[in-house]
Image (tube, rainbow, N blue to C red; front, side):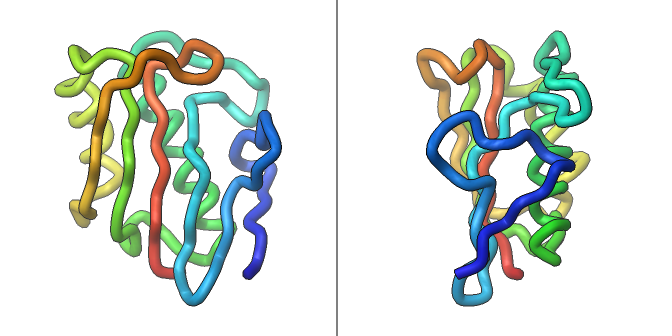
Length: 122
């Protein structure tokens, strides 16, 4: 196993890694919409979805992978009413249409509106 670590995505806010490469696959931790440059969270579901997607992309890049190699994502929304707006942004990044689960949860870290984790080929 190899740990994925990059300053182009937010650092872990708990006892976990940004991701791992194992047996030819990349496993990312859930990425919330924290801008790694300044630690800020943008306002609104569209801006937050873009930032979460960019953070996943940074981890994939650090692992030598990319959006086109994503096999499966799991997406978490604070409000299922944001589903359509989230999908519109998500579709701009994950154009290969990987398998996906998307669920609403009671709350997410830092009060954000979305979180995305991914599994990809390395």
